[in-house]
Length: 151
Image (cartoon, rainbow, N blue to C red; front, side, top):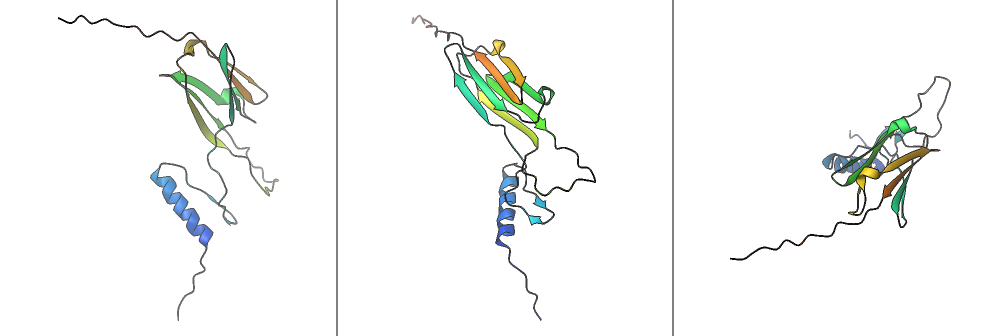
């Protein structure tokens, strides 16, 4: 007598994605109680708009449901980093979730600053779930010519 195994191509595809993610150090996909959910996301990155005017660059990052205490902005070696965590609401015994589409967890966005940005004068504002960063421009330094005497 032989055992029959039902082939599930979605499950095999999700296993392949998990192996790929492990190889590159990315988070694995999670299955839900009903079975594998191929389109579930474990990681997220806030959407940003980057604008430029004559005096500054402005970066607006959408961070709905977050407070300014949940976000950290740093500059190191010419790279601006925005990082934080959006925490999932705790479930109560009375609630029955039918669908959860909002993404929770940690995020990090990095941006290489142009040479004409004054990293020491970056200003940040947080209002209505939007983080606005103003990066003031400075005149780029002229390269110095160094004359070398040849003997």
